[in-house]
Length: 109
Image (cartoon, rainbow, N blue to C red; front, side):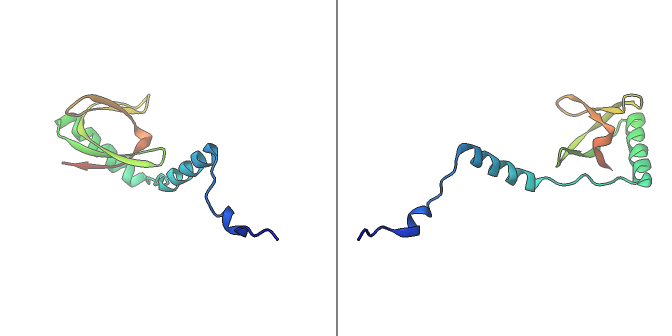
């Protein structure tokens, strides 16, 4: 009679590169967050702070949402283009163009 390890020999993990890539992508997708809805009052407040930063050249902190992740930019508003729906922010290092739809929060510094 042949004695082998039975089901134990199949307990070792066997992943194809495609499976490992898919599992990594699933972990990344779990970290993503939904875009918060900005109501009309919050949108007006954001606009007020952005315009004041443009006129008075004081720094603000913008919280942006981009494809499931949040990040912050600190700088001064240089230009607001409502036709293209972008604002230009000058940071310590560079000028960035930011889509207005990505802004979730603005804070005066």
